Amino acid sequence: MTHSDLSDVQIRVRALESALVAGGHVDPAALDALVETYEHQVGPHNGARVVARAWVDPGYRERLLADATPAIAELGIRGRQGEHMVAVENTPDVHNLVVCTLCSCYPWSVLGLPPVWYKSAPYRSRAVADPRGVLTDFGVTLGADVSVRVWDSTAEVRYLVIPQRPADSEGMTEDELAARVTRDSMIGVGTL
Amino acid sequence: MNGAHDMGGVHGFGPVVAEVDEPLFHAEWEKRVLGLVLALGAGGKWNIDISRFARENRPPAEYLSLSYYEIWLAGLERLLEERGRPTRVLAAADVPATLARGGPVDREPTHEARFAVGDAVVTKNLNPHGHTRLPRYARGKHGVIERVHGFHVFPDVNSTGTGEDPQWLYLVRFSGSELFGPDGDPGSSVSIDAFEPYLEPA
Image (cartoon, rainbow over all chains, first blue to last red; front, side, top):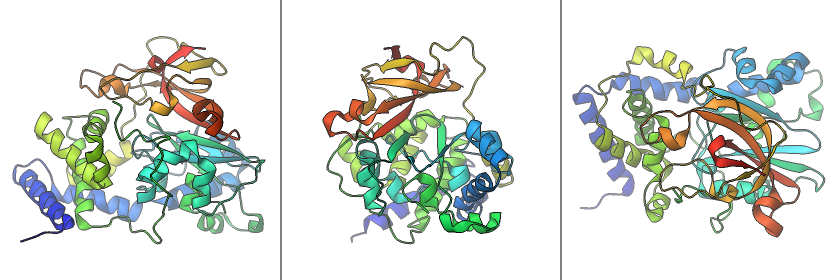
């Protein structure tokens, strides 16, 4: 009898969870609550609110760039993997790109769980050595006069990119602006 | 450790391929692994640095053969075997508060920072067998202190379970050419967060 790798892992995880629940080491309802949080509550819409506020409120932008953790908390956004935040702003001259070459550090509180490509070997290996090549993989071509700043999250500080506001967004409300902000633009592999 | 997890600058992994309309999870078991890792991590038997090392400290071929949540699962199995099962159980009702609190790692400084913004530094050429957060591509390189993050728990020691040994943490910026020579991007720079024991004055 053969199993696919997937079903082998599925069986292994079920056995582990069952043993831990039976021993009173895990509350299965807590597992459900944890998964539910990241499936439905915490995600890139959080970061998009931060970006939109920074675009419309110069005082907020200043506070965000000076000390991002309390500025983000002003919007009620805080928590795990967002305890020590730094916001970095794209300009016509500078493009920012965030990576974790050592594992998968990612600002969960503002972006949710990272996509597979962010955790993948191609991204982690090349983002520091060939950031423009990585951007090309995402269809982003920067002018030669634009410098690229790469932020490797090697400690517990987490980085949020503030993308440039789209040129055609004048007159939009803050909510409309937030709807324009993509996850990829807040990692730095996309532009708006 | 100089493991397969330390990927910065490695060649041959190919292009970055983003999945279109990627789901948050690719199988039900991935959800359970996420939940188990977070729930058991709140149990107090280990810390985030111990758990990172449990994932990374394995033969390179093995590390590279596992998917991300498979690495999390393998790490969790090792932690349970080595450190035991937690007796402090995260209750469902405590999940929101626990996630909101997170795990801040800044501590009250016990001494002055050795470096200031603008200082030229060089990273040490360290190759410990244990856990470290100084990536290989940034060892023995000249950079500049751009920000003093604060006084943070030191992963290299915290990962051994012998205490937090907090240290000053700095944002250090290197040019692409300093890191990767003529094959680097002269129009780029890379910043890492480096603990004071990784640094010397340049």
